[in-house]
Image (cartoon, rainbow, N blue to C red; front, side, top):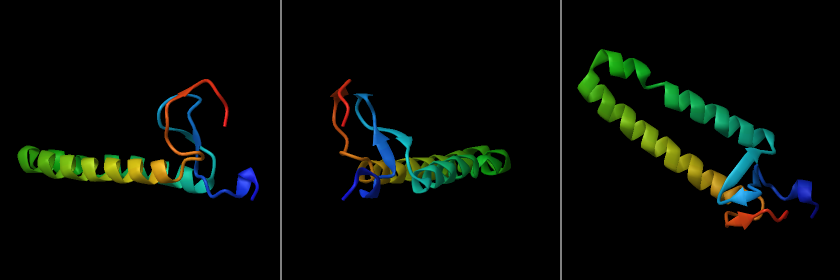
Length: 87
């Protein structure tokens, strides 16, 4: 299987731990969807500051956890600490 056909959506970071930039359209779509979901609860904050903050925080935490899990599973080579080496 070639490097392009490995099903990865994200490149590994060259330095540090985690995922780098998206390398497939699915990764870019996930990132765009995440941004939309992070902005979506803002009207709730104006509607009811107390209840809206709780709902918004729950949505934000769930969305962040979901993106982290998907990014970890779809990063070429997985997540590990890298100190400059190339995969």
